[in-house]
Length: 422
Ligand code: HEM
Image (cartoon, rainbow, N blue to C red; front, side, top):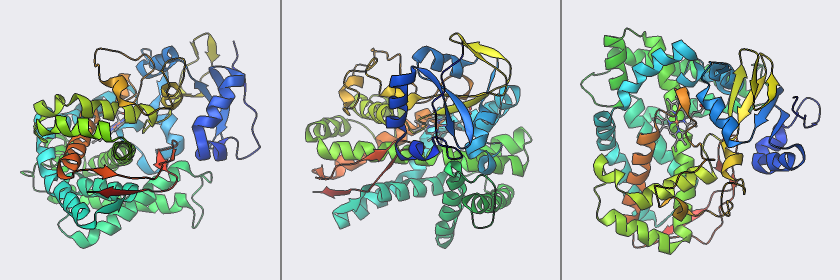
């Protein structure tokens, strides 16, 4: 069986509409074409599968038919080459097993300790200002957290520069001009990658291995014991920064906005928080209300809304023949907002996750299979740590502004909103 093709304007294909409002675009196409159809993104034809069963098969990929490396390459490839998600099969398994070490429970607990001064100073700043621009403030906070865990920087004056390099390296992911012509995002992004690579290589040689940051742990376990080069470590670090930063920023942004509009739920989180330590992992795991908020935020606005793969062997998926070299994609964003699987999916309603015994067949915020998010536990602990500290420190957080989020390629607000604290 062959999948229907969704027609699109030449050259730009669906890219502009996709970047503007991917969910509406895909839902509209889905109404006329069904759950499997081809569209054109960033100059490539992509076969999109929008059922839970196909999504599961794409992620589990038991026969190694679907390449994550070549799937992601066409958006983040040039600037995040050889990051974990840009590796496949045996090579990926080997590198993942090395990196996994730095995500052990005792290491995560240490990371949480290390970042507390940054989170505390953010709380103090909010206390003084009494109001803050939500996305801007959380983005800066998550960068400051990354500074502690991912960089080895004592010179604070360099941080803005590093932040700019990081921003420039992400921008090419969504640009339609894929060649590095002068002054393009791609050109700037590749230059930023080079500088970041130099930074991390340099620091890999000099970092104090008794430090307990993610960077020093990675150097310790992988350079000393597994023999990775400084260059390989630098490539992993750049990707880890990407994987950790916007994902946690967008999740905290939508959740804090929700709390500021739903005082009853805010009070529930406050009550739960009052009985929990904010940095003890066993305690954080007991935070069911906080976890439900986290789960709902990544349902409604999954930080990785679509996962592309390149088919590397002729194969078949749900009756559709897929020749080698076809791009396919799973779309958690669309599944998470599909009325067939969720009651009132438009509504941001954390209560749907409060009963942890209920399973959700159309829920893939962390993908699945070999590339399942490596930072998923850390992301949830960090999230709860920030949320609990916020509700603990203020009598009330409020806003009267609506938050409109553009859900793809990475969820971010169309316009930032102000939050007030009492
Ligand atoms: C709410 C937060 C987060 C969400 C929803 C999320 C989601 C995801 C998803 C869906 C993937 C796989 C994409 C695919 O297979 O196509 C992924 C991969 C990954 N994530 Fe996360 N992520 C989050 C936070 C983090 C954090 C905080 C870190 C690190 C500290 C991290 C590290 C990684 C890594 C290393 C991979 C690549 C895994 C591999 O290819 O084996 N993530 N993430």
